[in-house]
Length: 275
Length: 178
Image: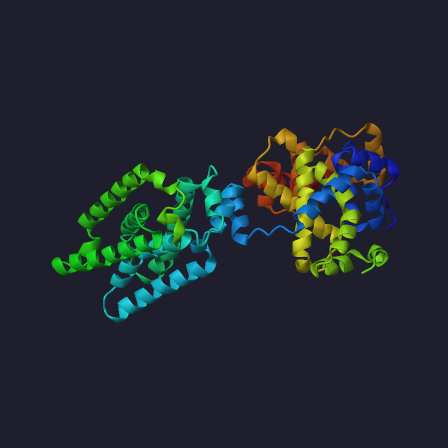
């Protein structure tokens, strides 16, 4: 290469006093020219260089932020919330994949028994409940007590995680719902899903979260079975009046949950000890 | 590897060693590249704290992602690609007012313009005649190699504006050069 950045040009470029066109030339040249890069690098304050390096060394051993965490940060989720979400087991890929598998299996089984989407509708609302059951508690969070003492601990932490579980569960349920069932069945499981999820959180203020999930799952299955057996039409458990009931249940549970939110701040509550 | 051997290694060899976990190689690569990276970033962001943060992020990304270097271009271009994207990401996370993004650029002196005219001929004059907004878009897309979306993130303008400005850049340059 015959052209090199001369001293004057370099000084102007470093000081930001060079016009755009000349800067373009300098920058394009620097990429391919090691001697010119060395020239310009010598101009940077050695103290700053060392200080920057110290920062790099300091963070070299830090864990690499997960891909999910970076993706969340990119769409505008604050870094600390992104970290929280990325460490929630039920929004990790293996869990989501297993949930999709379960739902697809439910749809296939349902169809092969000539039941239409029925089995899918029964299983889909339980996905977020299962997600809640594996997302909370001491078993996944070794710093549980420490977390309680922080401003994001307790109730707020629970809300952030529960929301992420709910959103991701709805998203994975949409996969089989869109691919495998008729359009009208795509949404009828959503309000029941919301209701049983909030109910699980509410019950978990009294008993452990896994027990709460078990109780709510049982209630849901028994409730659906009894409604279907007692009603004259199929899908009564997902009809308009049932949707109203589930909507009411979701709102009522949410209200009670707000009242009982103190129980998420206490150390030693069952909610924290199992999961 | 001994320190002197590292000093004599090419950037590509260093990156291979870094991929294998050699922190000494990273130090040598850092020393070679930190200077121009700091100054080039400073031309795109006048906030020194952010530049420092982005430089550190860049070398950490090199440390972790050295295995992804394919060696199909100069190492400096690869490092710059990482650095400028970190800057875009940084702006996206916490946008700065536009006046703090721009480097401390001023108009070139008449003398410089004359020198450049000799050096680069008509193209330089044509680029200089572009408005500053158009030149910023030209720099982000052509020189920095950013996509339309990334350029929009760097400059703090909508992606559609980047596209329409690029159309104007092309038109104005074509007119000036033919």
